[in-house]
Image (cartoon, rainbow, N blue to C red; front, side, top):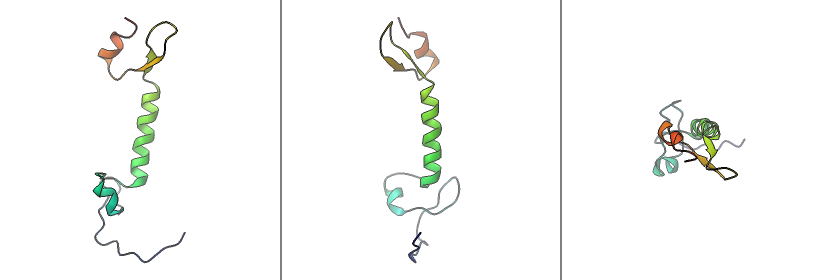
Length: 75
């Protein structure tokens, strides 16, 4: 990997691992570095995979986000 001598003194720090990340990422509203953001995204993806149910017989699958929504699936 090429390491350019970039001054990172003014770069923001990740709230989870305290590593410095690019200021443009902070401008977009992120408070975590790419590695921590990827870990969070993978965790959310694996959770959402388990939260789907068929809308009706032979129908498409629907995302179920809460227990209340699960009560009304298929009705």
